[in-house]
Structures are given as structure tokens and as C-alpha cells.
Length: 314
Figure 1 (cartoon, rainbow, N blue to C red):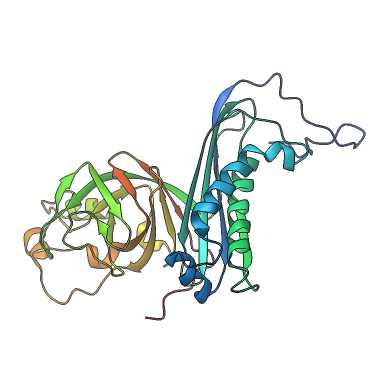
Figure 2 (spheres, rainbow, N blue to C red):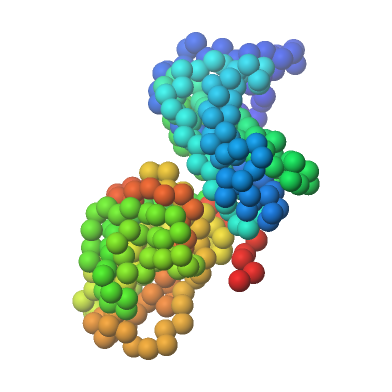
């Protein structure tokens, strides 16, 4: 890392950086942006009832086109051979739309600007689609979340942590241990497909850190993945310290949002009687699915602490 601006020469004049001597490597950047649209506009947008049409589809296309045009919009950026652009749009809460833009290129310089241009353009397009309903809509944030590759290596924003999915589990009945597996599908307004706890409510997916499971093993309890009725066992992130509203952006593109930390255990369920204790009420977390996708054992995810979150009034 240098403390000098790379876009200025020794005389302080603007220049385009010479990247000809850099190695061609695979580079990825993830950016996040959100726009406040208000409750009425968000309801119309999600129902597909805006006069201008499908705002989410139009915004995805706008974002992809913008990523490819970044060098024409930001003067000192380089034209890149972009490999892929992935745009995930979702309601952050009752009044906001969020966007993750993931851009990958195999080239001599990074794609941070491409990702941020894509994310912000998606939100600009959402504004254009809803301004007829509410001109008070406003873009609230656009920022880089993560970049990988290149000479400077990996970088992650300070309010995010990278974790790993260790194991997955589902069950056919509530209050019982789950059966471990290596892949599940997440569905919006439901949770984990074919799981008894799925449904249109605030605790669609349950997560527990292997660190918490190991605490129980250290007490001599014979427990394994699924013993505490968790759908997702993770490592690398202290789940129960994440604020309500935090986002979990998974490797597949699936997005979950944390809705509850721990729970009150009213009865001694089958999980408790089998394990002799239950760490889930203390250290487990619950989430809803915002963007569908597959979860697989070994996949990574990024936990991003709460940004502009307004909890439901219900």
C-alpha cells in the first residue's frame, strides 16, 4: 500500500496508470448499494405494479451494462475483459432495496470500480422506476465490500467477516434434531426447502457456529451437526454477536438477513433430552431468505453488519 496517489505524476498532473507490466490474474470485487424508496413504492415494485414495469429486471440489465461501460464513465479506469457480472437485488426492509454487484475479470487491474458502478447504477435505475410514486426516494450508500486478486491481495471492509459453511441439516419435524447433509436450497418466503421449520415467518433458517457446538462437546456431550436443530453450521464468524438486520451474502449468491439472536426455550424439547443441554437458545441465530440459491458444505459467506435497517413493525 502506498501513501501516494497513483493517478498523479511527479509534477502533480493527472495520468492514467501504466498497468502493462502487471500480471494477468483473476480478480473479483463485490460492491453493495441501497436505495430508500418508501413503503408504498416498495410494495408496488415487489408486486410488479409500477407503471414503468419490472423495476428489478430493468435494474439488473442496467447494472450489467454499466459495469461493461465503466472505462467510458470513470476517466482514468482501464477497459477490462470482464468474465462475469452478477447482480442480486432484494428488499432490505420495508422501505429499502439493496444490491450486491459481483464482478470478475481476468486482467491486469482490478474490478472495484466496475462493481461499484454496477451497484450504484442499479439503484439509480430503481430510483428512475419509482420516482413517479415518491420523488423522495434516495440512494443511501454505495461501497466496496470485498476484493480479491492482484498484487495488493485480498481486502474486506471493516464491518464484514468471511465465514465458512461447515455442514447443513434438515428435519421433517419441529423440535427434533436435524439430519446432516451437504447441500440445501433456499427459497424466498420459506427458508430451507423440505425443512419442517420453513414458512413465511421470521425464523426461516437457523444457524449455529461450530464453535458453539464444540463447547458442548467439551462438556462431554455426544453431539454432532444437526443435534441442536440448526440448518446451517458455520465457522469463522461469531454469529450471536451480529446485529439484527445484518446480511449474509453466500458464495452461490443467496442472501439471508438476521432476524433474531437466540430464542426462549419454553419446554425441554427432543434436542435437549438427546444432548443434555441446548446451546441454540443462547448462541443460535435465525434468518430469512432474501435471495434464493444453493448452500453447500465448504462454501464461504460474508457477514455484513447492519446497514440502514428498519425492522418490521409487526
